[in-house]
Image (tube, rainbow, N blue to C red):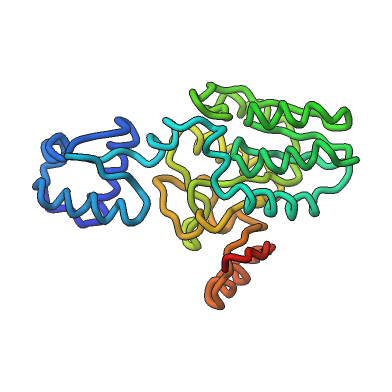
Length: 262
């Protein structure tokens, strides 16, 4: 195999990990014909970038680690920030709208707020727990997208719900992500979840990204919404002047949620 550039190697490593979830340096060396020493350097750099987790003799996908933890545990991470972001998001939801929520823990926080609001809505969601919360409000019509239930999570994956999306006009899609890049937009690890989220983006008039500070500048394998497809970002992350300029140039409305730790 001809010598690959570093970005090409990293992309290939992620593609392999996305299929296998975990791999050893020895196996990786045989598969892509790169020395073990070079691969160890690559894996260390990729771990620093939040793309994977190093193990003894190899690496695992970050998403693999996350999937080993129950949704109830994961939703506790930055819970207060997620609640404040969800509270801000609720301010732009008006009566009679059709909105969509993904299966993220931040969207679940938004669902908990909406179930106690005096508002008439249609809500489309890929989140099982999200749908359950919303069903407690008799003024909210809940449409749960079809798909494959991901073990240990709150989400449905795959494109089985795409046919429903083609029949629905969604005003705003509220979504979170594994990471956000000012160049690439909203990113996730799971190929199956990315596939569904892309369809959700395409069926929505507007896309609102709900991102706590830990998601900003975090890399992942695939984009489900380009920077040009995002209309609103709601976050506790304090933008630099350059970042603010970049979002303004793209016409993205940045709704800042103050966080005392910054």
